[in-house]
Amino acid sequence: MMELRHFRYFIAVAEELHFTRAAARLNIAAPTLSHQIRALESILGAKLLTRKTRTAVALTQAGKRFLDEARATLMQADHAALVVRRAARGEVGNLAIGYLFSASCSGTLSSAIMEFHAVHPEVSFQLRKLQPFTLYAAMADGLIDVAFTRATDRYPAGLVGMTIERLPLFLAIPAGHRLAARKQVSVDELGTEEFVSTSVAMEVGLWGDIAGTIAKTATPRIAARADDVFSVLNLVSAGIGISVVSEALGRLAIPGVVYRKLTGCSQQAEFAVVYRRNEDAPVVQAFISQMRAKTLGA
Image (cartoon, rainbow, N blue to C red; front, side, top):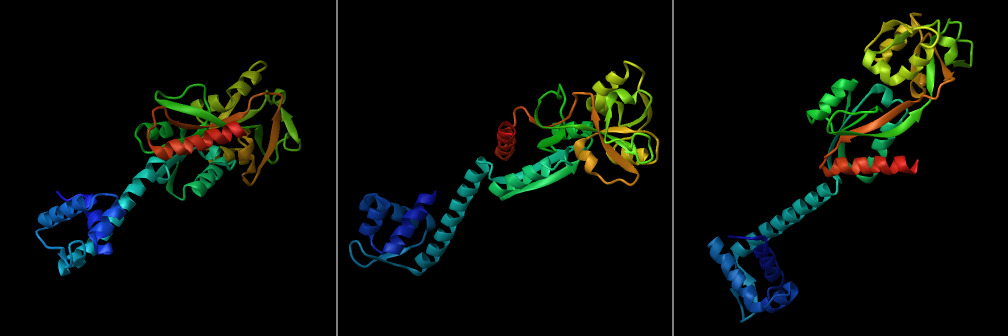
């Protein structure tokens, strides 16, 4: 059976046109090299070399053609080995990232991709904007590799979350609202307000503690709920109620909405990168390592 070493041996002889010099170049004995070339010719059923002297040779026409093919084959084999080694180091491949819109507004997601791409330029990225529960399902199904989402005390089985960002909370307020003229608003002043919120599950994670603070004096009144932040802010703009958002969302310019810092509470909007506990893909491991190093260095 023909092996890559046969190609290397033949190329050395074809380039040196001398068995002794080729053997020295390959660091093997000349008789061993001569035996290997005869074995190659037997496998191919063709004469590749003709002897001019005991050690000097010339290429046959078949040998000249085979030399081109042998060089191309070795080049492809070396390339394949390089690709595999780089893939094992996480330098090539594809990274599928799921994210919540609110987790992307601060620039952490885009900067993470930019920094990783600078070191791993041959890694391609796929981004998918998802809702929290579809995001976790996508991870379980292998549709995404990592997720940028809100941090929580507990993640689904098999997943690990690493908190990467903590942001102050703001209020989104209708422009004509009585609180809109304030520079900041205390949580103690919200007992009589009506709120626009996301779904119940998302609401608990984002401002459950604030709702608990308000509940000391009155039960928080939810005037409306929406599935996404744009819908929430449009309802705020329409005067349906106010909403609690992260500082990053306060950068969104929505007509009729103003943002004011929320004071009087220690809670922050926490965001995390979530990944599979037993992740074995090198490119994903490399990305998580980058995020961990950045978080520890922050």
